[in-house]
Each structure stands twice: as C-alpha cells, then as structure tokens.
Image 1 (spheres, rainbow, N blue to C red):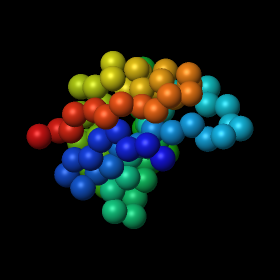
Image 2: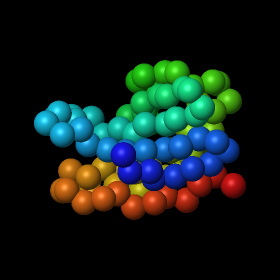
Image 3: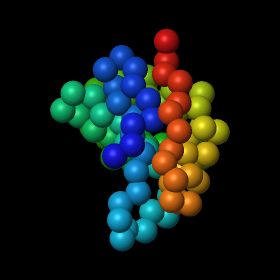
Image 4: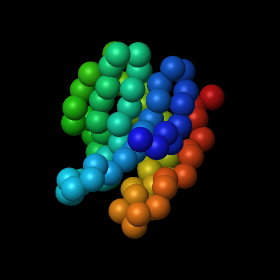
Length: 89
C-alpha cells in the first residue's frame, strides 16, 4: 500500500484494491492501532477511528494538499504509483 506522507506519527496511504471499484476518491490515515478513511472533494471522514487530535491534523493536512491528493488518485486510476506529499511541520 503506497505511503503518501508521514507526520506526527500519522501515516497517509492511498491504494487501489484489485478487482474493487472505487467510485469516490479517498485516502487512508493510520495512527497507532487506529485507522480512518477520508473522501476528497470535499474532505470528509467516512470511516472514523482516529483520536480527535490526529483527526484534526489529518483534515488540516488534506485541505492543504487536496490538489496533490486528487493528482495521486488519478495516477492510481491510470495504473501508476502515487507521488509523495509534503507533511505538516
């Protein structure tokens, strides 16, 4: 599963499951044993399981990098590996 970014112990990944249609562009966020899924345009939490502080960090990061996230989604759909995205500092 390609890693796009890592910051403050949070890992952001985006992948395409073989044989599964992915109708809505989305990414996965992981923090310790927690995981969440966010859609793009708009940035929206659809599978919550992150602590509130980490959820806010992920949402802020995603809003700053929405263009890059969409670029990476399109790369995945065309069979290419997504590109890394800058972390929060």
